[in-house]
Amino acid sequence: MRVTIVGIGLIGGSMALALKENGFANSVIGVDSNPDHQQKALELKLVDQILPLEEAIANTDLIVLAIPVNAAEKVLPFILDHTNRQVIMDVGSTKAGLLHAIELHKKRGRFVATHPMWGTEYSGPEAAIKGAFVEKACVICNKEENDADALALVEKLYQSLGMHLLYMNAEAHDVHVAYVSHISHITSFALANTVLEKEREEDAIFELASGGFESTVRLAKSNPDMWVPIFMQNKENVLDVLNEHIAQLRKFKACLEKENFSYLKELIEQANGIKRILK
Amino acid sequence: MRVTIVGIGLIGGSMALALKENGFANSVIGVDSNPDHQQKALELKLVDQILPLEEAIANTDLIVLAIPVNAAEKVLPFILDHTNRQVIMDVGSTKAGLLHAIELHKKRGRFVATHPMWGTEYSGPEAAIKGAFVEKACVICNKEENDADALALVEKLYQSLGMHLLYMNAEAHDVHVAYVSHISHITSFALANTVLEKEREEDAIFELASGGFESTVRLAKSNPDMWVPIFMQNKENVLDVLNEHIAQLRKFKACLEKENFSYLKELIEQANGIKRILK
Image (cartoon, rainbow over all chains, first blue to last red; front, side, top):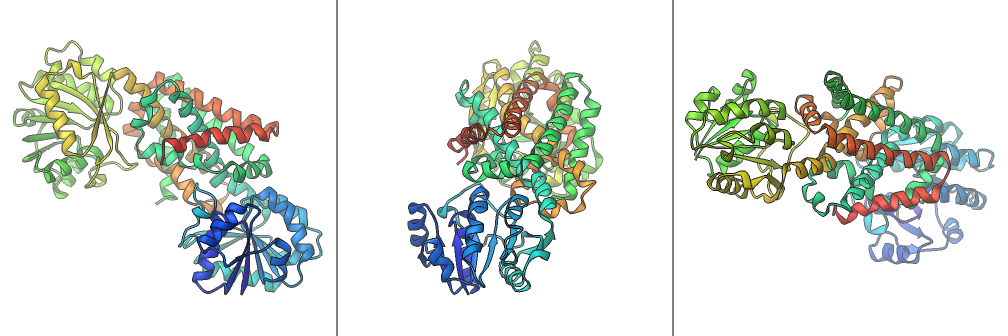
């Protein structure tokens, strides 16, 4: 199997590593608009060669789109225009807009919309790691719109990575990720800014930061070039969740202002319910 | 050195383990109002014996208060009334109220106010672990109010745990921890409640939760009996930071509503500044 990875960063690079190691890919072509990333991907042996997109398409069986979601939305129609029997998949964090952009394309069936639920706060080819994806969930959206062979190939790919598959439509996916991923990033960014503002006055503040702080703030290192397009594309859902989250924070605020400590205890006990989900 | 630990939970239990292992304590007496915790602490060999508080005070050189901050504020004057040459220290997350409560006590100099910056989201004697505290920071507050021998003993204790010491006054400590610890807990609790509300409608939502979600929400497992008193005692500082945090979140909200994506990028780039602090 000849695989092309478009965008050799954290996700694309980690996938290239895994697919070469497990034998799913015999060869991996890299496509990347950033010359530094091209060179780094070769140096780190994430890919076997770098080619321009059109040439890569012509010489591959499977194309993995691992670029920011706004870029994916632009390039996917072009790739579909230039493919014949190849299979194309993406790994992006939003789905409704992308699928809407190609819903009438005559090659629609060749594109499988996927979202492997794995990532770190780092980006670029240097962030690629071995052993990513294992035992994590991967969502496949609108599979009923896929050619059977295209879907089967992508399912086989994710199974080779040790992921378990979930199926849902693009709209449901975008709501769910607003809750379990996008809002976590916003709270982390906002928390970092809250504390960084204070740091201007108080140099020593971070000497006290311990594991709890690091844990809630680490996502604030995430790359804006990836996250601005995600928030942009999932604007309505993210706003809904953000409004709910601010309302929840206001409950804590009201408890403190009114010294209503029994309700504060109730709110924390409710939050402890997360133990059912996070072991 | 005979050490008494009052409150054999996550912090008290972990400290008992460490002080016995490194030889700082020859024997450890446990004091705990919860009979289950008493028994568990003996079973887990966190302490050598359990005694009532007064009897423990009479038979010890150093008393470590490791109970919720509201309980510490109540019991500390009693302990000072009953001590002679013993040294007393606490490990609580707030300091101004506690020190205010004893500022005129004639044994004030025997009490060293400390805050080792280590913890997990778990509680009780079963949560105690070996190797806690190592290479973390510990704050000592208002050291100028201490008897020299009491301060020296407590400094020696923390050095034996491998912690590095920071000194500040109680008010500065309480402001700093509002920023680097207390607000993280509130955002985590509120985020858990945001998502748990949604889960009532959508069973599948947590199948998608990945590492980023877990990281920002794990503190939501924390014990209300510990955290309500902390928020209560540090109410003013926590409210200040919470108001700032809500204001930061509103900036993200406004960017999305107005589709001001260049400012959204700026906000995220600002937040990336946290890389300077978290390696």
